[in-house]
Figure 1: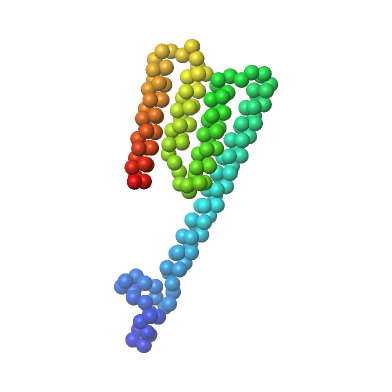
Figure 2 (figure 1 turned 60 degrees about the vertical axis):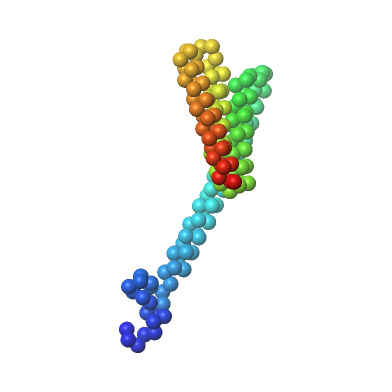
Length: 152
């Protein structure tokens, strides 16, 4: 290697490529390709989630129409759908996931479960589900508090 300029032979001890190969360029382009692909997959899945949610809303409205009455459980289910769409909307606007929205969805889902089970539910189950709602609410408050504090 005595006649080869240092820029062409690389530094084998430092781990740089030999013979003028640029390992950094191919690794960087591969990383950019993978990130771009994941970004496209993510966006497609978000569109699929919104489309499926809208289809579920249409089915629910048709079921309400056929039944001829709107129940509280139906309204709570619509709020679940609305929160899913809101979560996707916030994700698009901020380009990150807001962990409070799934907690809101869980609170609404547990509340809907209490409404659906109604008076037939055992008192112990009501207490457990109420404790779950309280724990989820406290979790949401902690996340909101921590996020606002981090923004300062």
